Image (cartoon, rainbow, N blue to C red; front, side, top):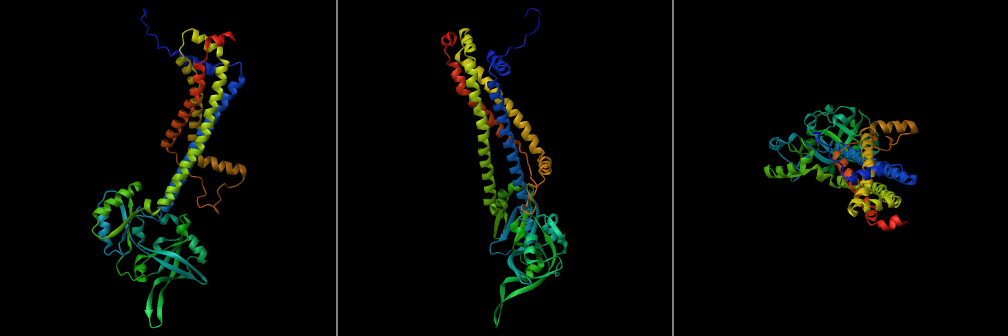
Length: 422
């Protein structure tokens, strides 16, 4: 202007009127109440979505870590069940930069006997120092030590449920029966060997706690008559999600005939089921947001009825139907935006503090929500992923905008003459 000052750019009048309608004190307080309920409904739905998906992410990560405590990222096993010269296989595998560690193993089925109790189990022969490179057994030892598995000591470390089923404690002696028998004039006699229980582990997965027994690799080779051969080599990677690609790369580089599998294939059905559950929970909880978002429809329909005269005046002043539609879409979008903002703040805050909130609720109720006697995972894990937050934000905002279309279109169709006449 002539004074030299630059005037700020004026907001579009549709935006200004929409914001004024949202802030104004209406004659009909019921409309304000419905608007508040819509905001709180969207906030509650978004909060529930963020918290539930974060908890499911936490469970998925917790279960994956427990499974990978005993299952390697990549497993190389002999084509006929045995591999000779495992050191060469380990060296060839270590040439890939993604491979962090390699360890040999001997694995076979066996029968464990103590007194009158007999249980079948998977017997795994390991080298404790090498096994530490690919698994995390030491962190899950409840009694004894993994280092007790020394050559010719014939010690054994049992899963907690397997030890409980047999009724054994550290120091007790169990008999391991190998399925391969010895041919004698009296017939086939199974091979037996007495082992001393030197430790008990608990990884929190019933499959392994009840069916896995660890012995020294040299002892396993003697028991199953494998001489210096092993069942295979287990690998640990820097990035566990790269396991399928590394497995394919190893299949092209290894010179020995071998079968290569990764953790995503050995537990594919389990992780696929967890992912399906997460997707279904997202769809179900999104319906809460949808119901709250479509409450905006009733809010705007009543607002349009209440503002018939205002709409008519705006039309006579030259406002186009599109502008009238924009006014009420701004009003509805603002309701959704405020509810969405409250939901994101509440959901993120609660997801990051589940470990504090859940114990507080348990103290208030005087009970434990997830008892250790029933659940292997007794705490409620939470892992907030911003990708999920972004998806929830986008879906919720789109639902809020869609809910404004019909009442805004109805407002744009108001006949000014009829509205002013009555």
